[in-house]
Image (cartoon, rainbow, N blue to C red; front, side, top):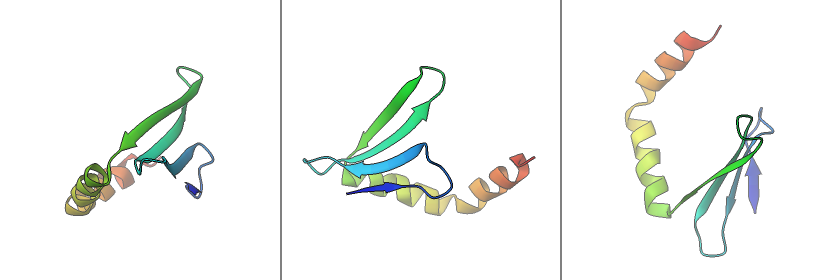
Length: 66
């Protein structure tokens, strides 16, 4: 069970057998994929932070688009 984030072939989300959420992204600097493993609780904390800071994030992102 994995998800490839639309619009980017370099980001993939999957789940380990132990239930950890795995984020995989290609890293051009090291020339191989980088992995981040999160527990469900850690992911929910990140999800809450993104929701709480959505307007600031969207504003900074939109300001950076060239």
